Image 1: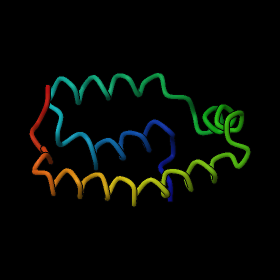
Image 2: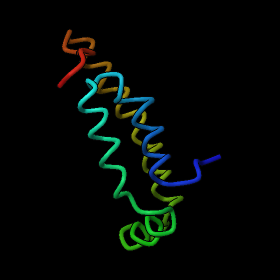
Image 3: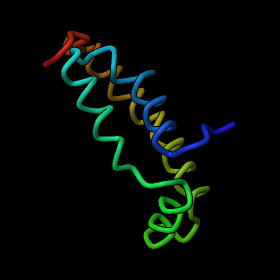
Length: 88
């Protein structure tokens, strides 16, 4: 089930993926930035202009990125360039 608001969905994704690599200031900045995130219906309406498949199309495109990101991470690890240091 998706979170009640689009902003909550973005925060959940951020907290589970990028937040651990950001310092306190960057984490708070991202939180403030989500204050201007549109509602689900506004986001849906805006995304429909760019993707004829709407929200479902967006989710499919995001899912399609996973193997690409896995390959990029693998290459970075192979080349000893994978970096998990906290930035900011």
